[in-house]
Image 1 (cartoon, one colour):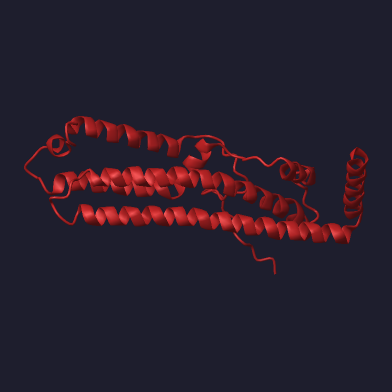
Image 2 (cartoon, helix red, strand yellow):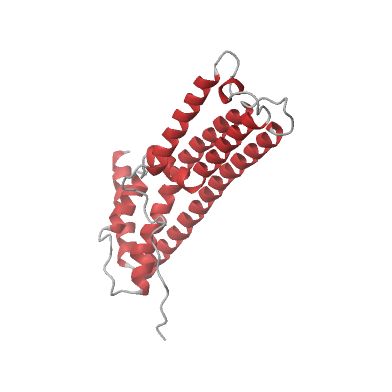
Length: 234
């Protein structure tokens, strides 16, 4: 049994060596691998979009109901805040998985495709094939959950949560102009002042997560300050 496994391992190593020595075969293998990783990246990109769509849908439904009648409680908008925050956590987890496949695609693009188009450029990752092989053998997430949360907040969720905050403030004040904000903001036995403090702490935390200055580890992501102008070389 042991000799059979050793023989199989030896055959696999020889096969890998033959593929590595044959440029045409290696090109075909890398091309298939690139298309496979690109397809998986696209699939996870779609899953991110689905989460965002559900967030917007739930948010719109709750806001419509909250403003449909003065008798509807204002705290239903805070329920929307919790729902959108839950979708934010789900999307952050999906984003970490999405980034795994995007990082592989970027390795191909930066070190294979870019080099094929312009061989004069130096490779950014000299050992990119070894890095990719290691990642295939022991796949791991590339970014922290904190960075994933921060990314999704900057992209879309901070705007959604900010709209909900404005809607809540307007809903509290719009239908009871003669009463104080603290009185109207009361939820059951919880006084309006305490509700306001809790909401303020939550949004302060969200703001810190969104604007926290840190070096991002995500590979190949567009930056807002990155811009390249196409030049006429004709």
